[in-house]
Length: 246
Image (tube, rainbow, N blue to C red; front, side, top):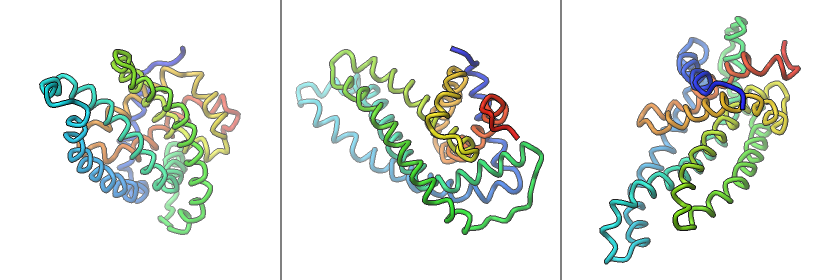
């Protein structure tokens, strides 16, 4: 497999610095608010339900095992919950993310335009990006089901947790790489073919996003950071081979 995973992770750091540039901040605010609200809900609901789940899974005479199983179940449930809530975040924030990718690309090309933030732009792109996001969610969900089945098999469920983390990193990379590539009319199927040419680098990018999502408070910036980083990665690593270069 080609690509350097550390190079991929570096693009996320690039994205973090880009989102604070003048002219880009306005496209970060709304996705940031979406993240704050939804992740807050995730934390509150998760904290309330986790103990109930442990009581349901373990009979009273095996309650002492909870301290052994807690890390495994916490990792598994957190991964599933994050995947679900991220899908909702991305579904709502997709129109903003497309415009953010467009503005980041303009800046990286040196064509900085003083384009004011316009709600009309968001509304015009809402339906197409919403349809695209739903298609991605369906694609991801169909491939997640076999992994979820593995969690039901004793012994194998330990390996399943590792596989789920690897799968999540790849899915996150696909999710955010879509925004700059879709802006150039590259369909999701073609995107996957391009990204697989540098699979390790792309996986490193996704793994860095996954790590960022695990850091409290900072994870609220994960969505715009990933979009900006994916845009830089698209321009420097894939645009020339896609036939869509300007």
